[in-house]
Image (cartoon, rainbow, N blue to C red):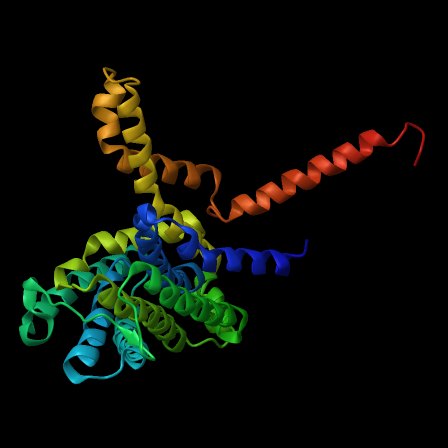
Length: 346
């Protein structure tokens, strides 16, 4: 079976998923919606951090800015939703491009602190424009409609997010394969060597921030009208850390790593909750120290343990599991083939 055929079968299965799942599993569709939107932001962050080598710990600010821009365009001005989402991305990209200039003089942990301050500042600034953002009370974006189709349910919204994700994945892969992507990698590996090769630090650093912010702005626009409630406080440090965790967990510098990491981290809390409830109902280890103390915070404990294991044994991220599995399978098949050949036969 060829790789392209596997992709087609997998994509068909994803398309059919919302239709075949029973109503009792609506929570799974909701979690998938959130994970795929977070994956869009993570793809942009992976271009910035994994490819261009620029650390950002305030990336949720771009997402929040895009969310409020999309809300303002759609519900206040009356711009169609399908046009508001990309505009939100471009406005966030302008903000990211502006942040890229201070980054020219910063690197490493200094850049991380600067972006952290940016992430804290943007929600406070958004809170000042209460007529637009509603302040800390927040606002309620309308249910989006596209060509007369209302996306009022999580199942319908799933397809809107999926189409957006596919388009942005295609764009990200083309960026990585282009001269721009090669310039980003040169910056990541050595800024001095990149400059010696004629690569402009100012041009490509600001471009990396702009592209990354565009992805976050688009995801923020989708997020606002999916959740139907946004507040400046919703886009704080917690989401920024989640995004950074996702790209490290999934695999730095890879588009698939951002998606795998987002799905894994998005579904892990529910999985541990199901395991916890199952153990509690069965009465297993009910009186043990583990059940009474550790499993109360099982989501955080498991996430931390998995991150440590990934860093130790999968430095290339979860996506490297596929490569390791293929190497293991090929090695085993070749060993079996050698054993099948009689001695003395070449």
